[in-house]
Image (cartoon, rainbow, N blue to C red; front, side, top):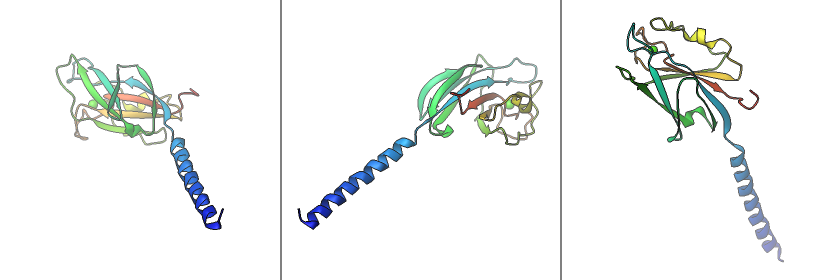
Length: 167
Ligand SMILES: [Ca+2]
């Protein structure tokens, strides 16, 4: 084999190796398991009315996965929490949800100083017992106005457990 032919073979092998290592790297970015728990829901159609039953449809990359009711949990494998989208449905209620406002809080994040609307609990009260690998997903469905007394970000509260296997 001539030197130039040998070099050609080497460069082809090299290219094959590079593409091989790229695909190995791509496979290393594997989805991470999480457990999502529908922890709390406190929203009313107005003062004095009963709490609304909010059903939450979970979508992963626009694909419907499951409908969650209060206290349900679901195990998912995700690359990012942004893979997930949610639809909120008020069951047998006289009002309907506004455009959702969402917030994700890690344990060390500052909890927004918001009191619960009407006689409902505040976020801080619901945070007790959260583990270091858990985060809170908060949703406001009553109003889009942060100055409204109904704006308490706890109409739907989910716990994102980022280490469900060790849990
Ligand atoms: Ca609210």
